Image (cartoon, rainbow, N blue to C red; front, side, top):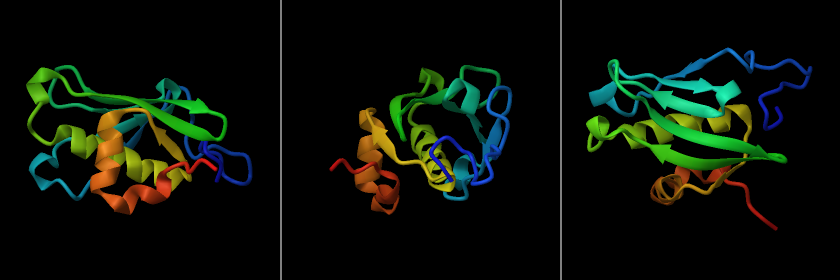
Length: 126
């Protein structure tokens, strides 16, 4: 599968523009009611809790890599493990899609350093 989510037959795993994909996380039972949703057309992952503003990881495509630009958690959701939950799910989805990522976001970079099981999704320069 290429980095943009296409399978070998040229079909996308899901429609890119108006779709969303729910990514589950079994690792965070305290916030299991929250679901991370991937919006490929917007190049972002969102995690909502209630009607408020979502937590977000934004990314952009750069050649054959995905650059994770920013992680944002609204003040009402901070201190609850939401950023870790969102990052975990985004990295699982990156792995599933065969993406290689460049973490321009310091939070994601630190998360991978602390969770080396995700090193396989890193784009290694060289």
